Image (cartoon, rainbow, N blue to C red; front, top):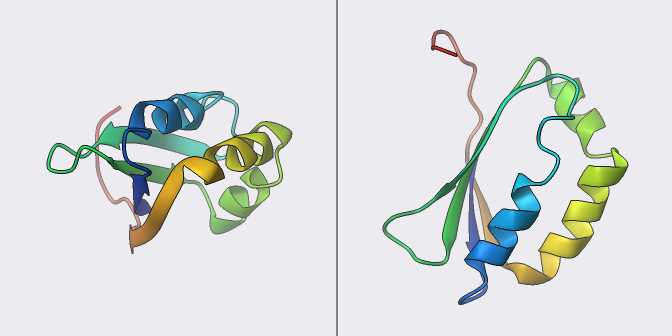
Length: 92
């Protein structure tokens, strides 16, 4: 999955800090990348690769993820899902 999040003006760094917390403890998550959009000072791109859709859905119930959502939501101006993907090749 690839999504674009626009933070409230001047709040991107704070939102990135929240998104980056605890990213290693999500069962079924093969990759979770948070990146600054170089064309927009308030935008963030998030790329996630999951073993299954169910693993992703289950991750949304993890206490750390739920807490991050609660803390991050007030910093978000908008969210746009860009693509749902299926990886076929890559490097680790």
